[in-house]
Image (cartoon, rainbow, N blue to C red; front, side, top):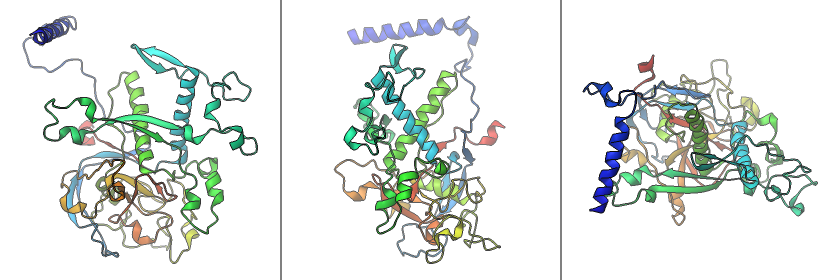
Length: 426
């Protein structure tokens, strides 16, 4: 009885508050069904560096002979709703923005740079951080740097193991299962919290290739400005997800602070979105540019891969090339074949094409710590600079373990389009 009285009091208070909103309250409705007034206006915003991929239908699967006879990519007709996708793979400099944000946020916490915002303690980003060795913040930030015995040539460097990003995500799939939507379970049971060390594994250039001299790439690829616009590598699937979550927060925090409606989250594309985008509207075409060849009419190679029997520099790049190299496909997407393979959100199953839905197909599995390795495989697409031409085909699937970074795997983000079509707003 006391709970019912409390609930009634809360409802009554809510009615009184709603009734007093605006100059005339609900009198402004004049008894008509007008919906909630003063809702924010919505116009689609194309995030910087992304292109719009319209809704459509395609036939997924092999466009040519299945060389491995694996039957991993069986032909099937599916439909995909519109979304945005990064025009290029995420570059070293773009990922470095994430790394620096995490670095600075840790420093602000150590320095006690906080401000109260609606009774919630938040980082005060306006405060200056003095990184110099003789500065006022030296002692407070000392734990962020390598100890003296771990320094090289006396250089003061950030300890990469300190760069941990903590975030949370909601498991919509688990919450939607039968029995979970009727308040039998607390909402907190579907909220997961993750801690991920986000610095790329720069040693991939050495341990991916035995008896091969790639140390200059280990030393310089992620840090040197010569490679700023090259795709980031050495990032595993978990780190790519952490980046997408941070990017969402960074974007929507700005929008909210400026009174704008938030958007759907940035995320990794599903493997089916990836294939649809890679084809560029050319259904059943073997390559993003159509095909059937890897060279154009002048004999020029159209992607960065391993031509012939290993003539790596023939296509204009020895390892990776700039993220916007070569011509884009008809959707404006660069390097959907070659350069680096790309993570998708999809879990890998040899027979996934047989049971996924034909409307926005999606096969995901969030692995647990004790799961067998077979359940920790994620789909990668597109082929890379070290792969033969067959791997560049839009219908070819491959996989890697989610906790493993490689010198030939990067990623790009996608974001669902809110609405039927971009043309509705023109």
